[in-house]
Image (cartoon, rainbow, N blue to C red; front, top):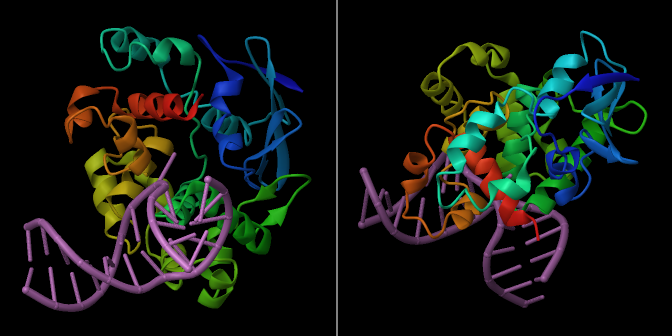
Amino acid sequence: MAFVAVPGPFDFVLTTERFRAFGSDRASLWHEGGLHRVVGGREVRIEPARGGVEVAPLDAETAPVVRAVLGLPFALDPFYAWAAGDEVLAPIVPRLLGFRPSLAPDPFEMLVGAITSQQVSLPSALAIRNRMIERFGVRAVEAWAFPTRERLAAAREEELVAVGFSRRKAEYVIGLARADIDLDGLVALPDDEVRARLVALRGIGAWTAEWFLARHLARPNAWPAGDLALRKAVAPLDAGEGRVRFHPFENLSAHYLLLAARLP
DNA sequence: ACCCAGGCATTGG
DNA sequence: CCAATGCATGGG
């Protein structure tokens, strides 16, 4: 086990709440008080420790995944200082101190996951996604490696329909896997260019592109305005007000608002 | 048996 | 350019 320090306030329970809230995700598996993922065929376990986490194994290949999963790219202190002056966030943020929105480590996994979540409830999406993972992915120890782009590019629509995808979504996923786009290269592009390239793909609309900016690229200004849960969370505000109101911390604001709405 | 759920593409006005 | 429609599953 290797210790990884996490700066500032850090709440492991809040940060990993997402992996327990709607059921168990085979590829980001909550198991015996820790989070398990498969990186390069090896299973990595992250568990809470004083001032940070314990990780095994920790090396050059697994460290970036740990960094993403724990949301380490986010700077919380500037957000907290700013949120104290907003009457919507001020009462919410203090009880969520140390919550770091988890980032999806892999762009393809992020997009496929988003497609499964389009329109349906999150428990439904998770059930379908887990059946897909078990059919096309590879199990390490407890956790499963998410299906590779190559594997899904080779899949047939009928195979995805068999695990619960609509015919349309099966087309989207296979089409994405086969598309001529460098998903890893998107990190180098500005927000609007990322949006434009993603929305050009069939099955990826504004909602999915915005969550990709927010939860994969950690872009500060990403704001999934069309998201149903987020719209409910900001219902008292005027339509379209959120994006302006929470600038320049749209992404963190959205995550804190959504988590606050989920907690009892 | 309904109805809704962290959308999207397609079609029709 | 905006409104209506089908999609498939899980949970209430």
